Image (tube, rainbow, N blue to C red; front, side):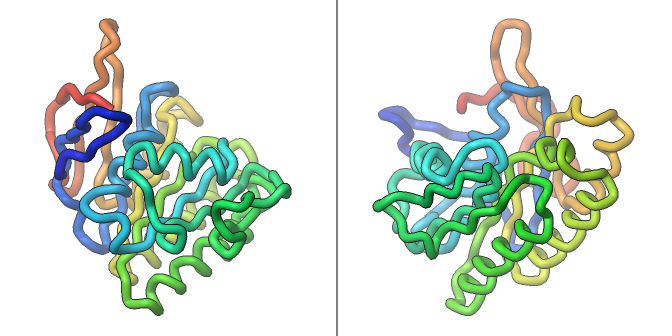
Length: 222
């Protein structure tokens, strides 16, 4: 991954460029920066030369754009689309047209989320540009829907990402729900990125599955 200027500083993460068709699950305890790491993986290389789709279950569209651009830099309006599951119906404001935002009533509306994601995926696919899809967080979706439905949703979404030659990055708190459920949700993914924080406050990552990053716990700054 090429270093990217972020908030006046350089941020470098130990991950290779993700190949088209790859689906990645980022998992770890709460408050370990999984959302920011997802944004960094979505922003690899040149985000203005492809589409980025972000499904957000905890922050509204405006804050999601702000957080993404803190990592990626300024992104053209038509290169960033948001599926907002927070339930805020106030609109997206002046900066970005509503054509780039799909509002969904809550994180349990998997059908609505799927419709929004499919609309934006089709747009970028028809343009002949690549795209990356990020979803934060599966843990919130599991508070609104059961494991079976969320797994079915994942199976469909990761399949579409793979067949389109896009890239998917999803996040999950590894403490919600129990470990058996986490193992089930890992199944559709090509790679797993685990995140942890040491007692000294140092964040570390390691990967499993596809060879996209370090196999052993490696300190990171993000």
